[in-house]
Length: 337
Length: 262
Image (tube, rainbow over all chains, first blue to last red; front, side):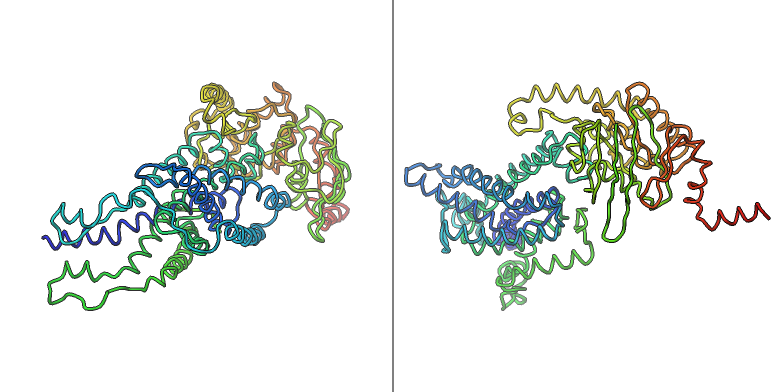
């Protein structure tokens, strides 16, 4: 019985808690991708670098606050800096739209052209981020590291296995819940949100209404700036910030959005968790959990790890391919690609 | 009201509209008929700003409106419906109607947060107006249904209802009767006549149902191969030889002629 509890705690500690936190970050990223797909109708390859840009600005503001001696108690200072990061990212996105995307929108360019254009934007943002903050890894999490450490947990429960809950995990989950609730309230209850849904439902008809298309586009970019920066900062607090890592995040984020159904916000959230849990489950060494569960004679000698963590992106890819083969519009019905 | 001057729309080598000139008189219910592929819908798409013309002009009350976007034309009171009815599927029928009017307070982020009262008052007024429109169209019972779940004919009525949420001047109806049952088609026909009489809407209607055209429309414009073939009252048009030829083909007509002389 105690072994069973130990197994559950180990499972929580190494799989469920980290995957929930990672899933929430992916979900926020995928929501941004899915909003752009639903309303502006293209896959935005620059999204990973938008997240990196927002995070970089937030880190700079965090450092400024720290140099002024401003802190946020046990919470990371980055949360105070987040609104500034969002604001600057919003300006960047609106500027990009004005200079680049609007031109192609007026041309009524095919989505595939916009995708290529977004790749160009991606490379520029990529360079911009490295120019602003450099290529090296940055740790900017401060405040309390743990809500409860493994040792505290062991002492508290008397169990063998420990459960550490990091502050960043709690912040990630709480923030994600608040952001998602606010987003859904906005989309379903406000007139601006309804205009966005109308645009996503039927663009031809939306243009034949009093809806101002340019305003819908603007609000979309503002929401995307907020979602991308929040996702990026949460990921950075949880792990660390490195421009290249964020560029790579594009893959699991797109996998999440596509798996859930592109253009469908609920799908993006579901997809984020599906991808995160699959990645963690496939790359986790199950030895510890199994040792608790199985009789000593059956205890595994190897790590019982299905894939090395180096292959975690392969997991996103595999899910992506399988879903596209069997359910091209995603788990929840999105727009057909 | 609307004057189309020598309008061309080419898709590569295909001349969908090939030098069409026509006039839609203010206060009329003008019918636009012609065989499939005659260029009727393309003409609508060009007039309504969905496609840019290859050449030619469109005037509305003497003002050049060629190449304006659908959104700009909407603000001028030029509205259209689609051959296959369009709707905002994720919203209710009432919400669909409430989306139509422009300049709503709730459209800006600032007002969303800081002028909740003004928005609420406006929304109530819009909801009331939407309910009146639904009553006029005799589909009040559908108000809270998802628009994606109502029948094709009811969607056509909803599209007509959209035009009633604003002060429309001219409405282009693309095949209002396609896939609509008799009873509902009569309801639509009655609504069109009432809107024309009571609110002074001008209509231009593409339709294949000649009974419907004959009952509602005067004048009727016939298009074939991208050009305007004939124009006149419905009765007049139905006896026009060129029109019969366009619909039935030259060979058939010659055969009937040959049969008559023999």
